[in-house]
Length: 255
Ligand SMILES: Nc1ncnc2c1ncn2[C@@H]1O[C@H](COP(=O)(O)OP(=O)(O)OP(=O)(O)O)[C@@H](O)[C@H]1O
Ligand SMILES: [Mg+2]
Image (cartoon, rainbow, N blue to C red; front, top):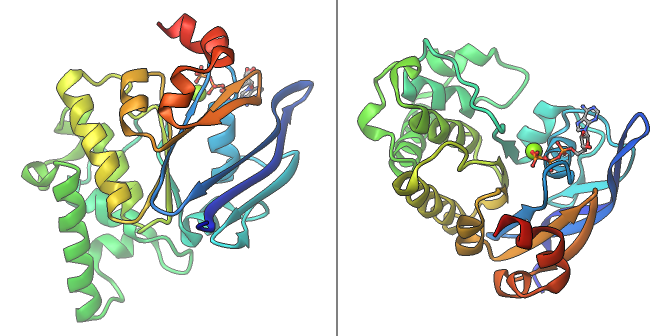
């Protein structure tokens, strides 16, 4: 038994009278790809937003690397090793691709965000380590050839990969990906699934929300299925594919 890197226990989140998440528990193990699937409005984004700290949860506990993070501010969770991307791309158009990734490396509140881009307050050794890390990230996200291009000029698929690259820059224990395949065509989805596996193989666990079933079934080690804010199934892709409750609630409709 490996200890989970991320543990969600009895998570509840209500918006006024809407119970978006009810009593949700699951674990993400070290170097594991966990998929979170379910119909529209089943609570997937609410789960990711609760983990990332976009809003306070109603009740429950979230533990990362043994530390309770559910009371922490968003940036403290990033500093503790939880990084995320959004369902829609959000980037800074005027930065170069490389600068944008470097920006993601600065996760502590004590320094100004732009100090990372301009290298203020870093020692020579740190500078080199950072450059190597950024190179590795640009390499695996397939962005090396556009590293000096302005973010506003790269393709929308490259912008999506850049969001993942920026989230990886803080060297997270867990990365949360909300619909990373949205808007990608077939060969770009292949690049994405290769990237997700590379992220895991480099030691970062991945929690991925996705409607694209072929991608989910191909990359995930385990899958959690939500319906109306509750977990209705959990298992390997094979178990989920053949689970009658899941087929009834979701896969039937998706197929
Ligand atoms: N900020 C909010 N205020 C009020 N209700 C919300 C809010 N965010 C989500 N909800 C409600 O919570 C429920 C779960 O929504 P959520 O966005 O988490 O679903 P989802 O599984 O991500 O859906 P999709 O597949 O469409 O992205 C829905 O009923 C939604 O209307
Ligand atoms: Mg969503």
